[in-house]
Length: 283
Image 1: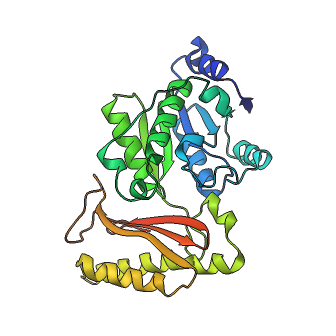
Image 2 (image 1 turned 90 degrees about the vertical axis):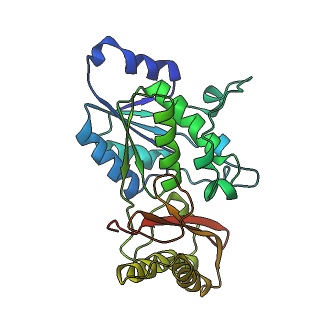
């Protein structure tokens, strides 16, 4: 397994003659890997000849007073997981090289970036789409894999890739959950034991909505009220948003159907967690 820090070196490997038509699969991350990331890497190993993992805590997708400085990091453990998953190259650029002095270009994916996390974190998805576009230009992947836990992020990247005619296949991978249902996230490391228990209210709300939908309840008002009631029982939980959207374009819906997305963002103490489910898909 190679560890590369230089953009020029990474680009040289991606376009080298010895690539000889081999398929590059790519998993971009901010590090502090968990089983969710590992599932992407294992699938990426199956789909291509060269598997590249990037680790980069992207400063331009963090807003003022967000957790950039305290975002969890453990590079040694990340590299161990990468090696176990069969990664060929770990690309770890610096912020100074990714955004050198005078950097002023960005990528903005308009409407689909505005609701949900886009409303709570203005400019966040401009930072995401810009860094992903840069990474695609550096790594030159044929296939890139992203987790569906960040559903809106995946939708933004799909839209950007399509709109800009990027020759990259985007693969969305299922949410990986703990045995009790909590969606795996690097930010789970922030939770105290008591908060970790409180955080189960997100999955509780998702489970309740799916049960109601399976029983024939399609009213958005009813489903919203039931989901909110479960979360609001937890004193540590504060809802940022709880919305039902069309899973394709993230537009508002009046009646739930099998393609409807339930998207949640909830603060547990000082930690903001997200989760989601598409009502007609398996958990």
